[in-house]
Image (cartoon, rainbow, N blue to C red; front, side, top):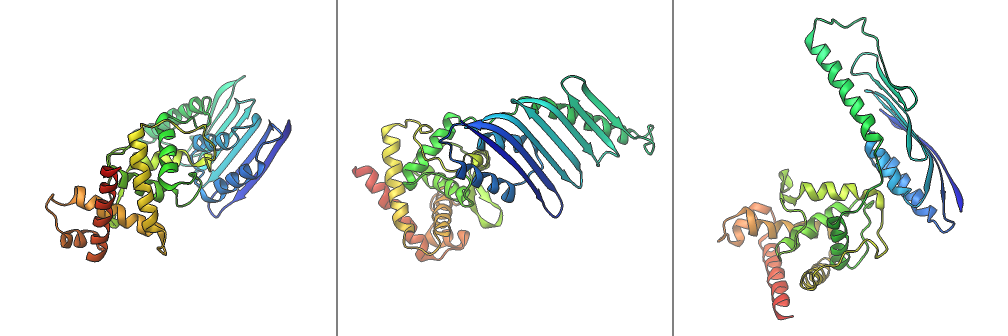
Length: 318
């Protein structure tokens, strides 16, 4: 067993975050992976949700036995501090600048205390009183939720997504990779054409017209602190027919993007063209209409239509 001690402070232009962690782990723990995920979290992630901060840190440190965890965050709206000992919430403090000089503090032994300098507030002004009341309720709810904040627990749909990714791309998913959302959104949008889905509800994203599932986007973001999934424990058994289809589609798509300069752009193009032909235009849409709708040249539309037909032939023949 080894002791794990982390003490990190990052100051940004408009905010700052500090993390202090003490724990115990097995000697074979991958400290390099933990360090990489923590650096990624600190440098490339928003920190204004304390519940999300705790969830991410505990997920990154999931192989450790937590002894102490302190996280403090400050921005123009105020400051927030949370402290755990042996997973138990021992202290919470929030100073809210949006409500003038308002502070809430919690300790298990003394409970919740409120401090509010109201000398400038007109207690006859309902909007001020209503704002204060909502602020108090929100902070008490925050304390309740922080008492029960745990690491990310994979659902069956999460595990299915991981398995699908491995079959489709023939590689492990890395949820901390900046391109992971594009790769997963395009993968599932393309697979929908062949009857494979997890999160339904794809719609076109603003002016880019890229098919996007908000539920899928939130799922991928939730899995962010897991980093690369390089084991088989998080796989889930899929029906043999579904596995066969995913492998065929994935192999064909990988072959198409392998020689392109920007694989992400090619994946997006395939996804957009398939979506346009399936949903956004009438069933008798021709190539010219799809070209006008997506902004891609007719030759690229024809190439992707040919890809879909080729995949369907492979599925039907095998």
